[in-house]
Length: 307
Ligand code: CP
Ligand code: NVA
Image (cartoon, rainbow, N blue to C red):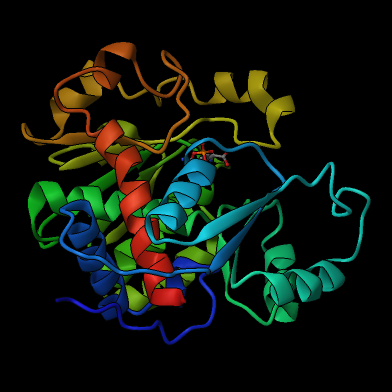
């Protein structure tokens, strides 16, 4: 039986907290969980969840993952706990890590997540920040692997806002050697420090392309991926962004320029007729709900490798 190997890093704050080998290992464990080929138990282990932003998939998939592993979760509501009253992160982290075995945190600033990790004696997992969404990327590459078996020659094109989801795709693409193209309006490019890190990892392979032209970015691509134009916390930019992102909708015209067997991904939640048309969202090319299911298997694998 395949045994989970403990990750070298205590925490999973960024996609770069795993090596390429570890990333492949998590995907392999996740595949085995999905096929019911693994019976790993984390009996009596407790996962603490802190969500400063809304969540359906991440919250529930972590809860179900922990339940399947024989452990439990405590979902801390920031408004009814002292977190919402502004108790310092360093105090919350020191207390919670004496009760819980691992913490999954969704918050705004990556530096706040890092502060939790600094003061927590137990592993901390990034359940989304403004900068990264590494748990999402695990499920994304699991879904891509299910379709194409191998990452070799896969071209992944992300069309939309160069935000947390795009940042994590870039980092994982670099780690795995996948060609990643990002098409976004001017001024909405992914984080420049992360782009530089990705270029460093890719070495000089020219596999990361950032463009403002979605039509060239999709040419021959195997995976077309999008995310909401206005992320959580950016609600006040919605009207402006809808104007700027005009032309960045994944529609049948863009899909026709991709590889004929291309698949469509979306991290969800989606705004139909904004970043993606209903026709494409519901089309036979969509793997969006497999991708959402894979959040569960990937996080079950991550928990097994981090605990
Ligand atoms: N994709 C994702 O993280 O979804 P939730 O916001 O529902 O957790
Ligand atoms: N970029 C989106 C992802 C949601 C899963 C957001 O941060 O709201």
